[in-house]
Each structure stands twice: as structure tokens, then as C-alpha cells.
Image 1 (spheres, helix red, strand yellow):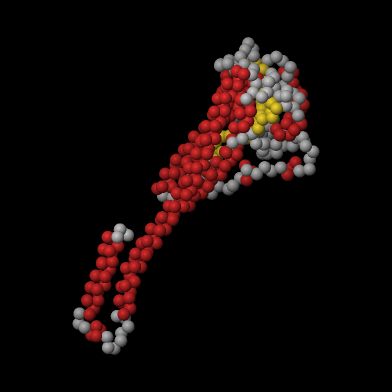
Image 2 (cartoon, one colour; image 1 turned 60 degrees about the vertical axis):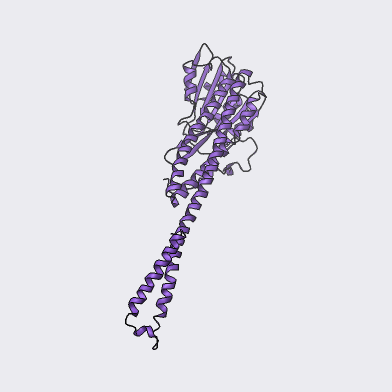
Length: 363
């Protein structure tokens, strides 16, 4: 079981007090500082050649902007405003885009700036220790021959298979353009949602068995914790449906017709994820109702037993009360067999009521 888990309101309520009163477009980092140094990974490739380097210097990436090859620049860490601003200015990004990149509480969205597309997604993972979902914002800039991706954390991501396909020249990724690379990044994030949902499914199955077998207060805490996590999951994924739909319609010239077919598949996966989330939400709500009903039934069973015992002892108490008055002229007080007869009457009345309750199936 999970035990008591405090509510992290930062997952649901953005903390934007640092930006209060600042002009629009001011790049101020909003969110948890997850890495000490900003690390930049650059991959430049086409079907024939490949270059890969890791650096902390933004200037090392600038010469690749005008090359005819596909350039993927991945930035781990968005808390250093100067590096984000330098890279953004050189690739012609709007100040509001730079502001959104550093404000890591954005909802999933896509914005068309003619020469590039700005895409915001939530990359999620499962924390086995806390049994909860952890997430970070991923900002993707799709240009004509480049893709920039900005992440909060450098401890790991879901882009490993994409890097391997590029390095090993597997699949069609080396033959396609920057739009296909952007699709691959979005697809990797969406596919990882199914991993999160599988973990949720396992937890829900365990709790469901416990609710029916032996629900406790700890069970209620776990259900409430999972409901909060499901709210966070829905908040992070639900807007993605509109994002992928816009990309799949190919409103921008940056997305080729061949890539649109693959984006349609991502849209289908997004719908599946949303449907599973809604199913899990209904299941958790149902388990909460079952838990409350189970407590009510248990209380009813206790009250039923107590009521039966009270119903049996009420007439016996009445009889004992009568013969405990000790009036002088009560004839039964001097009868030789009065005491045994009284106990026989007590037993007959008690057994008769037990047989009656049994026939009525109250016992």
C-alpha cells in the first residue's frame, strides 16, 4: 500500500508569481530546476552522412542552421535564459515562444509561425517509489530543415530508440525530412503513455481485488491518490488530441503529405490513450462507490446483529423485571418450582425468537 501521500498542488496549479508584472515575452524559468548544467546534443544527418556531438556551448550549434541536411538540436535544461535566448534568436523564434519554452507549465498546444511550428507536449514517466506519474514539458520547434527540442531534465527521456535509428541508419528516418523527425519525437512520447497506462492498470487491478475482499482506510487513500494522478494524466494528455489533429491536417507547408499519413496513426493512438484514461476514471469512481457501499453494508450487518440480540433480550428483561419487584403477595415467589419454571420460560422464549428469526432468514 502507499501510505499517506501529500498532495503536490504544483502538478495542478501553476506557480507564476515570478512573472508577475514583467513584460510579455520575458524569458523567466518557471518550474523545477532539474539539472545543474544545460547540455546540448546535436545530430546532423542525411541519407549519406551523420554528425553527432554533445556540448554546453550554444555557439557550436549555430553553423548548422543553414545546412541542407536535417539538424536535430536537443537541449536538456531550460533554466538558463541566456542560452535559450541565444539559440532562439539565431533560429528566428518569437519572444513569446522563448517565454513559453522556459515556462514549463504550458498545456499541450501547437502554434504556427509560418517559418516554423511550435509544439508543446508532456513527456510522462512512472515513479515506482511513489506510485505516481512524473512529467516534464517538451517543446519542439519544427523548421524547414531543423528540429529543436527543449527538455527540463537530462536524466532520461523516451527518445533513445530514435537516436539509435538515426545512428544505425535503420528505417526511413534518414531518408525523410525534418517533419518526419518531429513526427518520430511526438510518436515516441505518445507511445510511452501506454507504458504509464499499463502501470495504472496493474495498480487498479490490485485495488479492485482489495475493495471486494477487505477494504480498509488505506484502500480509500490509495483510491484517492490514483484519482488525483488520473486527473493529472488527463490534464497532460487531453489537449494533445487537438494538437495532433492540427498536425495531421497539414495546415502548414512544413509537413509533407507522406508524414501526414504517420501523424494520422499518432492521432489514433492519442484517441486510444484518452479512451483508456476515461475508462480508468470510471473504474476508480466505481471502486470508490463500492468502498462506501462495502462500509455501509458492514455497518448494516453489525447493526443487524445488535438489533437481533436486543430483540431477544427485551422480553427476557421484561420477565426478569416483573419477578424482580419482590411484592409481598406475589404467589410465584413462594412456589417451590417457581425458579426452575422461570428459567424454562426464559429459554423457551429466547429459543422461539431465534427459530423465528432463522425462518425469516434474518440470521
